[in-house]
Image 1 (cartoon, rainbow, N blue to C red):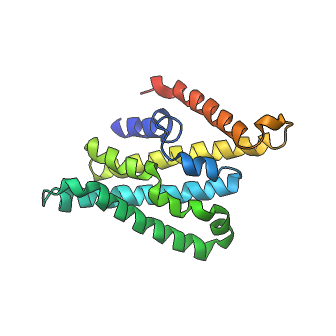
Image 2 (image 1 turned 90 degrees about the vertical axis):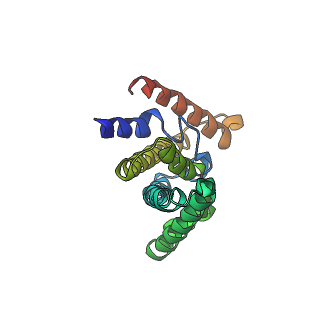
Length: 190
């Protein structure tokens, strides 16, 4: 039952983008096309899952063992940066078009506060290794859900006659805020 609560909470109730407002930069920047948003969602899912796994091990076996928990943020950022480099190399080799469309946002996963926030929240919640990885995957699914839904809505908005003053980024911000309000409706679930 606790795993179900973690899943629902991370995907819907405490969605990193729409409830916690973490990871807004790639959410707004890479959400013009569903294909690009899906690629970013997969990259963030891999990075979040691996970061949760690695940081939990580092926290337990290095930082706590040597009583240097104050190095947590620096250690976690280094792990995330290494994972993002790995993802960047894989995406560049396997899908050059996706690599080009993600552009600068792929390396920005390193500074994506959703990834760092997740690792720190896992430690603060005192999740074991399994729960940390489950929470990471669920949070990444929530991030992916939000960015893909937003991209689909933005693609549809491009087909409509939007007043000139709202075209582009203003309508995107209005849409994101309405999505956030909609996700707040899930708050009573958990």
